[in-house]
Image (tube, rainbow, N blue to C red; front, top):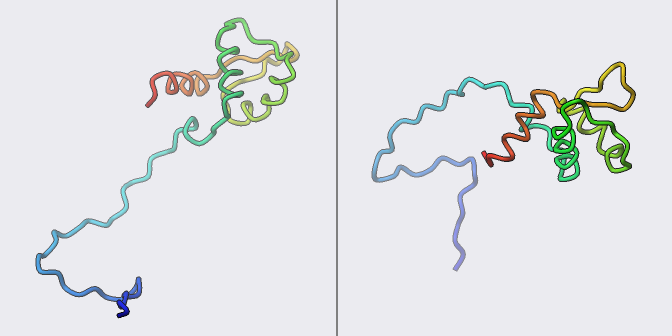
Length: 105
């Protein structure tokens, strides 16, 4: 015996109990956090931890750092120092990203 399945857009039969009215208005959208939008991977997290560990600025010299540098810079987690070649510092967004990872929010 075949069972008929109603089409997804078909009207449903009335249920025996009335459900309360649901407010389907959209909630006001909040500005997304940059830390939520820009994943950088495990190598990026390790790079950010090295940058955080050097308060004077971290000099990018490792090959692995150079490979992840662009992605982390594009995410806004680091800022290059203008006078020092290949030296970066952690931005407030980068610090918030690392803090959020530590707290596992």
